[in-house]
Image 1 (tube, rainbow, N blue to C red):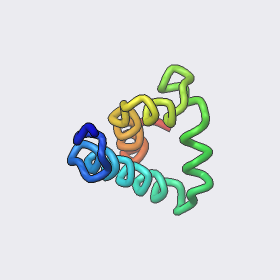
Image 2 (image 1 turned 45 degrees about the horizontal axis):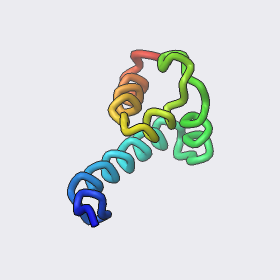
Image 3 (image 1 turned 135 degrees about the vertical axis):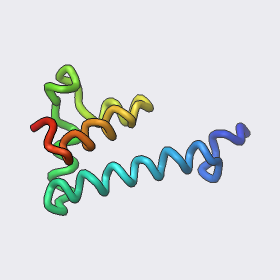
Image 4 (image 1 turned 180 degrees about the vertical axis):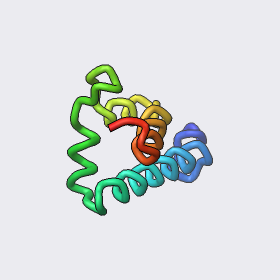
Length: 78
């Protein structure tokens, strides 16, 4: 078994923590609605070249979604 792929390993825990943080941030931005968060995550976004935020999460590029959420929170984009 590869120790870097177990749920207890630091890289996996870091990814999980980052995912939970960005989901919490998005939920706050969307009035507490997980339904809206899920819709937003799975909708094509013009600032992502028409790809969905979920695509970037699924491909290990959560920093793209974190940056977009930060920009939304700070009124840099709509």
